[in-house]
Amino acid sequence: MTTTLGVASAEATPGWQATLLPLPAGHPGTSGFVFGTDGKGGYAGELAIDDRSQVVTWRDGKPSVRGVPSGYENAHVLDQNGAGTVLLQAYGAEASMTGIFLLDDQGFHEVPAPAGYTKAHGLALNERGDVLGTASAEKTAEQVTVVWPVRGVGPVVIPTDGETWPTDLDIDGTVLFGSTRGPYTWRNGTVEKLAVPAGYTFALPRSIRNGTVVGSADAAGVNGSTGFRWTSAAAPERLADSSAGFRVNGSGLIAGALTSEPSVSYGHPAVWQGPGSVAKLPLPDGFAVGRAYAIGDDGAIAGIAANGPLDEGGAPVVWHRTEIGHG
Image 1 (tube, helix red, strand yellow):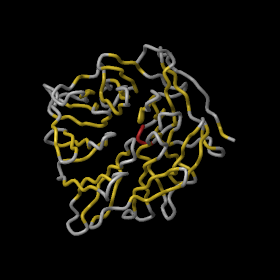
Image 2 (cartoon, one colour):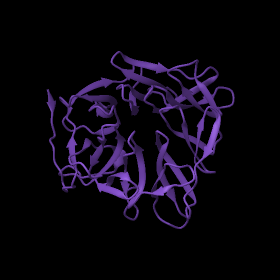
Image 3 (cartoon, one colour):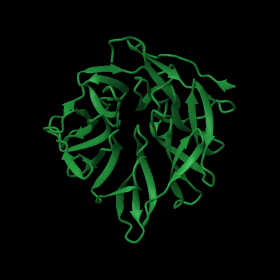
Image 4 (tube, helix red, strand yellow):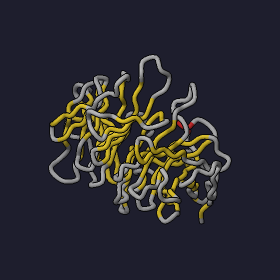
Protein backbone atom coordinates (compact mmCIF):
# COMPACT_ATOMS: atom_id res chain seq x y z
CA MET A 1 0.00 0.00 0.00
CA THR A 2 1.07 3.58 -0.57
CA THR A 3 -0.07 6.97 0.57
CA THR A 4 -1.14 9.03 -2.41
CA LEU A 5 -1.02 12.80 -1.98
CA GLY A 6 -2.99 13.48 -5.13
CA VAL A 7 -2.88 15.64 -8.24
CA ALA A 8 -3.39 19.37 -8.00
CA SER A 9 -2.47 22.63 -9.66
CA ALA A 10 -2.33 25.84 -7.65
CA GLU A 11 -2.09 27.97 -10.79
CA ALA A 12 -3.47 26.63 -14.04
CA THR A 13 -0.52 26.85 -16.41
CA PRO A 14 -1.60 25.91 -19.94
CA GLY A 15 0.16 22.77 -21.09
CA TRP A 16 1.55 21.55 -17.76
CA GLN A 17 0.25 19.70 -14.71
CA ALA A 18 1.90 19.00 -11.34
CA THR A 19 1.51 15.54 -9.80
CA LEU A 20 2.66 14.67 -6.30
CA LEU A 21 4.43 11.31 -6.27
CA PRO A 22 3.08 8.82 -3.70
CA LEU A 23 5.06 8.37 -0.51
CA PRO A 24 6.07 4.96 0.90
CA ALA A 25 3.50 3.31 3.15
CA GLY A 26 3.96 4.21 6.79
CA HIS A 27 5.75 7.48 6.01
CA PRO A 28 2.96 9.93 5.11
CA GLY A 29 4.79 13.08 6.19
CA THR A 30 8.29 12.39 4.98
CA SER A 31 10.15 14.76 2.67
CA GLY A 32 13.27 14.76 0.56
CA PHE A 33 14.39 15.22 -3.03
CA VAL A 34 13.89 13.75 -6.51
CA PHE A 35 17.08 14.05 -8.56
CA GLY A 36 16.63 11.43 -11.29
CA THR A 37 14.32 10.12 -14.00
CA ASP A 38 14.72 7.38 -16.60
CA GLY A 39 12.54 9.22 -19.11
CA LYS A 40 10.07 6.33 -19.07
CA GLY A 41 7.96 7.16 -16.02
CA GLY A 42 10.56 6.06 -13.46
CA TYR A 43 12.07 8.40 -10.87
CA ALA A 44 14.73 8.30 -8.16
CA GLY A 45 15.43 10.35 -5.07
CA GLU A 46 16.02 10.27 -1.37
CA LEU A 47 13.56 10.58 1.49
CA ALA A 48 14.00 10.93 5.24
CA ILE A 49 12.95 7.51 6.55
CA ASP A 50 13.75 6.15 10.02
CA ASP A 51 16.09 9.07 10.75
CA ARG A 52 18.17 8.31 7.66
CA SER A 53 18.29 9.59 4.10
CA GLN A 54 17.33 6.53 2.06
CA VAL A 55 17.07 5.91 -1.69
CA VAL A 56 13.52 5.69 -3.02
CA THR A 57 12.61 4.84 -6.61
CA TRP A 58 9.25 5.09 -8.35
CA ARG A 59 8.13 2.76 -11.12
CA ASP A 60 4.61 2.55 -12.57
CA GLY A 61 3.58 5.18 -10.02
CA LYS A 62 4.62 3.05 -7.02
CA PRO A 63 7.42 3.92 -4.57
CA SER A 64 10.04 1.42 -3.44
CA VAL A 65 12.37 2.09 -0.51
CA ARG A 66 15.76 0.86 -1.71
CA GLY A 67 17.61 1.85 1.46
CA VAL A 68 21.37 2.50 1.57
CA PRO A 69 24.42 0.37 0.72
CA SER A 70 25.43 -2.08 3.45
CA GLY A 71 27.62 -0.48 6.11
CA TYR A 72 26.55 3.07 5.32
CA GLU A 73 24.16 5.40 7.13
CA ASN A 74 22.78 7.77 4.50
CA ALA A 75 22.52 8.07 0.72
CA HIS A 76 22.32 11.02 -1.67
CA VAL A 77 20.95 10.38 -5.17
CA LEU A 78 22.88 12.13 -7.94
CA ASP A 79 21.47 10.99 -11.28
CA GLN A 80 19.53 8.32 -13.18
CA ASN A 81 19.79 7.20 -16.81
CA GLY A 82 17.41 5.68 -19.33
CA ALA A 83 18.21 2.14 -18.21
CA GLY A 84 16.88 3.05 -14.77
CA THR A 85 20.33 2.83 -13.15
CA VAL A 86 20.75 5.26 -10.25
CA LEU A 87 23.99 7.00 -9.29
CA LEU A 88 24.34 7.85 -5.61
CA GLN A 89 26.79 8.87 -2.93
CA ALA A 90 26.73 6.90 0.34
CA TYR A 91 27.92 8.23 3.69
CA GLY A 92 28.98 6.37 6.83
CA ALA A 93 28.87 7.23 10.51
CA GLU A 94 32.24 8.95 10.19
CA ALA A 95 32.63 11.93 7.86
CA SER A 96 35.56 10.29 6.07
CA MET A 97 33.50 7.22 5.14
CA THR A 98 31.93 7.82 1.75
CA GLY A 99 31.65 6.05 -1.59
CA ILE A 100 30.09 6.13 -5.05
CA PHE A 101 27.50 3.48 -5.87
CA LEU A 102 25.31 2.45 -8.78
CA LEU A 103 21.89 0.96 -8.04
CA ASP A 104 20.04 -1.32 -10.45
CA ASP A 105 17.59 -4.23 -10.18
CA GLN A 106 20.39 -6.41 -8.74
CA GLY A 107 21.21 -3.96 -5.94
CA PHE A 108 24.06 -1.61 -5.06
CA HIS A 109 27.43 -1.76 -6.84
CA GLU A 110 30.39 0.28 -5.61
CA VAL A 111 32.39 2.44 -8.05
CA PRO A 112 35.93 2.29 -6.62
CA ALA A 113 38.38 5.18 -6.63
CA PRO A 114 41.28 4.84 -9.10
CA ALA A 115 44.50 3.30 -7.78
CA GLY A 116 46.40 5.90 -5.77
CA TYR A 117 43.30 7.98 -5.10
CA THR A 118 40.68 8.17 -2.35
CA LYS A 119 37.57 10.13 -1.34
CA ALA A 120 35.73 9.53 -4.61
CA HIS A 121 32.58 11.59 -5.11
CA GLY A 122 30.07 11.08 -7.92
CA LEU A 123 28.48 13.79 -10.06
CA ALA A 124 26.72 12.44 -13.14
CA LEU A 125 25.71 9.31 -15.05
CA ASN A 126 25.20 9.38 -18.81
CA GLU A 127 22.91 7.30 -21.00
CA ARG A 128 25.48 4.63 -21.86
CA GLY A 129 26.44 4.18 -18.19
CA ASP A 130 29.64 6.23 -17.84
CA VAL A 131 30.13 7.83 -14.43
CA LEU A 132 31.63 11.27 -13.76
CA GLY A 133 33.13 12.20 -10.42
CA THR A 134 36.15 13.43 -8.51
CA ALA A 135 38.83 11.85 -6.33
CA SER A 136 41.76 12.98 -4.19
CA ALA A 137 45.34 11.79 -4.56
CA GLU A 138 46.38 9.75 -1.52
CA LYS A 139 49.81 11.40 -1.21
CA THR A 140 49.09 15.03 -2.10
CA ALA A 141 45.30 15.35 -1.54
CA GLU A 142 45.15 16.98 -4.98
CA GLN A 143 41.67 16.64 -6.47
CA VAL A 144 41.22 15.30 -9.98
CA THR A 145 38.26 14.66 -12.26
CA VAL A 146 37.52 11.00 -13.00
CA VAL A 147 35.42 9.29 -15.68
CA TRP A 148 34.56 5.62 -15.15
CA PRO A 149 33.66 4.35 -18.64
CA VAL A 150 31.12 1.55 -18.89
CA ARG A 151 33.21 0.29 -21.81
CA GLY A 152 37.00 0.25 -22.11
CA VAL A 153 39.76 -0.08 -19.56
CA GLY A 154 39.67 1.41 -16.09
CA PRO A 155 38.89 4.94 -14.97
CA VAL A 156 40.17 7.98 -16.87
CA VAL A 157 41.86 10.59 -14.66
CA ILE A 158 41.68 14.20 -15.89
CA PRO A 159 43.99 16.60 -14.02
CA THR A 160 42.21 19.72 -12.75
CA ASP A 161 43.14 22.55 -10.43
CA GLY A 162 41.42 24.29 -7.55
CA GLU A 163 39.76 26.78 -9.90
CA THR A 164 38.10 24.12 -12.07
CA TRP A 165 35.30 21.67 -11.35
CA PRO A 166 33.33 19.11 -13.41
CA THR A 167 29.55 19.50 -13.60
CA ASP A 168 28.08 17.01 -16.11
CA LEU A 169 28.78 14.23 -18.62
CA ASP A 170 27.32 14.03 -22.14
CA ILE A 171 26.19 10.83 -23.85
CA ASP A 172 29.41 10.69 -25.94
CA GLY A 173 31.69 11.09 -22.92
CA THR A 174 32.21 14.85 -23.20
CA VAL A 175 32.84 16.33 -19.75
CA LEU A 176 31.41 19.75 -18.91
CA PHE A 177 33.57 21.92 -16.66
CA GLY A 178 33.05 25.12 -14.75
CA SER A 179 36.05 27.34 -14.06
CA THR A 180 36.91 30.76 -12.72
CA ARG A 181 38.52 31.28 -16.13
CA GLY A 182 35.32 30.38 -17.98
CA PRO A 183 33.38 27.18 -18.74
CA TYR A 184 34.62 24.57 -21.18
CA THR A 185 34.14 21.02 -22.43
CA TRP A 186 36.69 18.19 -22.55
CA ARG A 187 36.57 15.12 -24.79
CA ASN A 188 39.46 12.71 -25.32
CA GLY A 189 41.93 15.42 -24.32
CA THR A 190 40.46 18.12 -26.57
CA VAL A 191 39.24 21.27 -24.81
CA GLU A 192 36.64 23.71 -26.19
CA LYS A 193 35.95 26.95 -24.33
CA LEU A 194 32.39 28.21 -23.92
CA ALA A 195 31.94 31.95 -24.27
CA VAL A 196 30.87 33.97 -21.25
CA PRO A 197 27.83 36.00 -22.39
CA ALA A 198 28.59 39.60 -23.37
CA GLY A 199 28.07 41.95 -20.43
CA TYR A 200 28.49 39.16 -17.87
CA THR A 201 31.54 38.39 -15.75
CA PHE A 202 31.02 34.73 -14.81
CA ALA A 203 29.21 31.76 -16.34
CA LEU A 204 28.22 28.58 -14.50
CA PRO A 205 27.49 25.56 -16.74
CA ARG A 206 25.17 22.98 -15.18
CA SER A 207 24.03 20.39 -17.73
CA ILE A 208 24.99 19.05 -21.17
CA ARG A 209 23.06 16.76 -23.53
CA ASN A 210 23.79 16.07 -27.19
CA GLY A 211 26.20 19.01 -27.15
CA THR A 212 23.69 21.54 -25.79
CA VAL A 213 24.76 23.20 -22.53
CA VAL A 214 22.55 25.08 -20.08
CA GLY A 215 23.48 27.09 -17.02
CA SER A 216 23.57 30.65 -15.77
CA ALA A 217 25.67 33.79 -15.78
CA ASP A 218 26.28 36.66 -13.36
CA ALA A 219 26.98 40.32 -14.11
CA ALA A 220 29.03 42.64 -11.92
CA GLY A 221 26.87 44.75 -9.62
CA VAL A 222 23.68 42.85 -10.50
CA ASN A 223 21.83 40.84 -7.86
CA GLY A 224 20.86 37.40 -9.15
CA SER A 225 21.81 35.34 -12.17
CA THR A 226 20.37 34.84 -15.66
CA GLY A 227 19.85 31.51 -17.45
CA PHE A 228 21.64 30.73 -20.73
CA ARG A 229 21.81 28.03 -23.38
CA TRP A 230 24.87 27.17 -25.49
CA THR A 231 24.10 25.30 -28.72
CA SER A 232 27.29 26.86 -30.06
CA ALA A 233 30.36 27.38 -27.87
CA ALA A 234 30.74 30.96 -29.12
CA ALA A 235 27.09 32.08 -29.01
CA PRO A 236 25.29 31.72 -25.66
CA GLU A 237 21.56 32.48 -25.80
CA ARG A 238 19.67 34.08 -22.93
CA LEU A 239 16.68 32.16 -21.58
CA ALA A 240 13.73 34.54 -21.32
CA ASP A 241 12.70 35.60 -17.80
CA SER A 242 15.17 33.18 -16.20
CA SER A 243 17.57 32.95 -13.30
CA ALA A 244 19.08 29.59 -14.38
CA GLY A 245 18.80 26.61 -16.68
CA PHE A 246 19.29 23.48 -14.56
CA ARG A 247 18.87 20.48 -16.88
CA VAL A 248 18.33 19.76 -20.59
CA ASN A 249 16.99 16.60 -22.23
CA GLY A 250 17.71 14.91 -25.54
CA SER A 251 15.24 17.06 -27.49
CA GLY A 252 16.56 20.30 -26.04
CA LEU A 253 13.78 20.89 -23.50
CA ILE A 254 15.19 22.87 -20.56
CA ALA A 255 14.11 22.80 -16.91
CA GLY A 256 15.13 25.74 -14.78
CA ALA A 257 13.92 28.70 -12.75
CA LEU A 258 12.34 32.05 -13.51
CA THR A 259 13.89 35.36 -12.54
CA SER A 260 14.16 35.43 -8.76
CA GLU A 261 12.84 37.94 -6.28
CA PRO A 262 15.34 40.04 -4.30
CA SER A 263 17.28 37.98 -1.72
CA VAL A 264 16.03 34.70 -3.31
CA SER A 265 18.59 32.49 -5.06
CA TYR A 266 16.29 31.14 -7.78
CA GLY A 267 12.73 31.82 -8.81
CA HIS A 268 9.70 29.70 -9.61
CA PRO A 269 10.30 26.45 -11.58
CA ALA A 270 9.85 26.77 -15.34
CA VAL A 271 10.50 25.07 -18.67
CA TRP A 272 11.89 26.36 -21.98
CA GLN A 273 11.53 24.75 -25.41
CA GLY A 274 13.76 27.47 -26.83
CA PRO A 275 15.38 30.63 -25.45
CA GLY A 276 12.20 32.70 -25.89
CA SER A 277 9.60 29.98 -25.20
CA VAL A 278 9.00 29.82 -21.46
CA ALA A 279 6.23 28.23 -19.39
CA LYS A 280 5.85 28.64 -15.64
CA LEU A 281 5.36 25.25 -14.00
CA PRO A 282 2.37 25.05 -11.64
CA LEU A 283 2.75 24.04 -8.00
CA PRO A 284 0.49 21.53 -6.25
CA ASP A 285 -2.18 23.09 -4.03
CA GLY A 286 -0.89 24.09 -0.62
CA PHE A 287 2.73 24.64 -1.67
CA ALA A 288 4.49 27.97 -2.06
CA VAL A 289 7.81 27.10 -3.71
CA GLY A 290 9.34 24.39 -5.88
CA ARG A 291 12.47 23.35 -7.72
CA ALA A 292 12.98 21.25 -10.87
CA TYR A 293 15.96 18.87 -10.59
CA ALA A 294 15.64 16.36 -13.44
CA ILE A 295 14.14 16.12 -16.92
CA GLY A 296 13.57 12.98 -18.98
CA ASP A 297 13.52 12.34 -22.69
CA ASP A 298 9.77 11.83 -22.32
CA GLY A 299 9.50 15.51 -21.34
CA ALA A 300 8.57 14.81 -17.72
CA ILE A 301 10.25 17.05 -15.13
CA ALA A 302 10.92 15.91 -11.57
CA GLY A 303 11.62 17.91 -8.42
CA ILE A 304 10.06 19.02 -5.17
CA ALA A 305 7.44 21.38 -3.79
CA ALA A 306 7.73 22.91 -0.33
CA ASN A 307 6.68 25.68 2.05
CA GLY A 308 10.12 26.22 3.53
CA PRO A 309 13.75 26.36 2.44
CA LEU A 310 14.21 24.19 -0.64
CA ASP A 311 17.61 22.95 0.53
CA GLU A 312 15.77 21.18 3.36
CA GLY A 313 13.74 19.10 0.92
CA GLY A 314 10.06 18.87 0.14
CA ALA A 315 7.31 16.74 -1.34
CA PRO A 316 8.33 14.79 -4.49
CA VAL A 317 6.57 16.15 -7.56
CA VAL A 318 6.52 15.50 -11.32
CA TRP A 319 5.40 17.88 -14.04
CA HIS A 320 3.88 16.49 -17.24
CA ARG A 321 3.00 18.30 -20.43
CA THR A 322 -0.75 18.09 -21.06
CA GLU A 323 -1.07 20.07 -24.30
CA ILE A 324 1.02 20.00 -27.45
CA GLY A 325 2.56 23.31 -28.42
CA HIS A 326 3.25 24.74 -24.96
CA GLY A 327 6.58 25.00 -23.12
